[in-house]
Length: 416
Ligand code: HGY
Ligand code: MN
Ligand code: MN
Image (cartoon, rainbow, N blue to C red; front, side):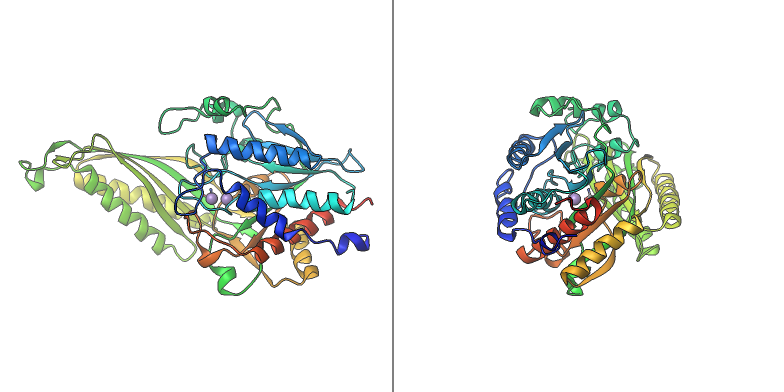
């Protein structure tokens, strides 16, 4: 690689500015970002991103699920592009960095190559994946999952949010149902920069996480059907209380996750009481459960134990509980060669680093099922994410972007 390329560093201030400039799209009073996928705020940041990519000389295409692909030509266009990027949608109580850092660092990599007049051998393609978060529409990482063939485009287009709006309608609503078929934009490999969203790197004073694996994910939709009745006149032994049932299930999820820990976690993030009233015993509740482990066998044990606990609680309380496994994402083992390329870049740049497993799911975990993929982590403050307090330092973001830059250059090769 030429001396100019090997000494290349991104423009830290410019990256930092873009992170804080785009944070205004969906900014919350607490300083977070609420930018649900395919919302008006998502449109704002997508429009900004398209303009910035075109301003950097990239050709932007949008696929049928709204994922955005921004292509930088290479000397040899017969080679598949090296992909880099992440997502721009956020959780309802999201922060400025989750997904955004990886997508904007990819733009910064291109801007840095442009400033240096460097042409890569293979082309590059920046990607903003639609609906990584899975908060408004399930499952998470849905567009990259469709890209690798886990779901059909039509299946994903028909997914509905809590208001009954489909993905297709939401895409049309913001003008991002693209004409490129899902999967048509080929990628030869993919590298994603992301904040760790956990406490390890910060606790160990490591700048870079060389991500070699990722937890598997189990998502369930559940429904409890008990019996509405009078809060005052119904004797306790006669009640079929859906909310008391839910309370037991929540504690069962916690107990099961702890039983299989430390390589297991369990969360019940949503519960909706139908027709709630303070003096009516709840009769119907919809809920969701999210269980994860980096170990396939533990995932199976989590599923088995959850089903057994739900059946036992339902029987004891004489209520009906349905539990549907709507998404099973096996654990991820990233491509060893690409993981080594990330580690080599961190070493060449002199950053402290360590191998790490991702607790969170990422689009890279889907891409990895089809093409060589790796991830780069940087610390976030107190390991906090999916919270408006999410924070990171400019120097760590720059370090991650530099590792992304040099990992990508190792994959594309430098023509001039
Ligand atoms: O759920 C996840 O792990 C990701 O943050 N969407
Ligand atoms: Mn993310
Ligand atoms: Mn997230």
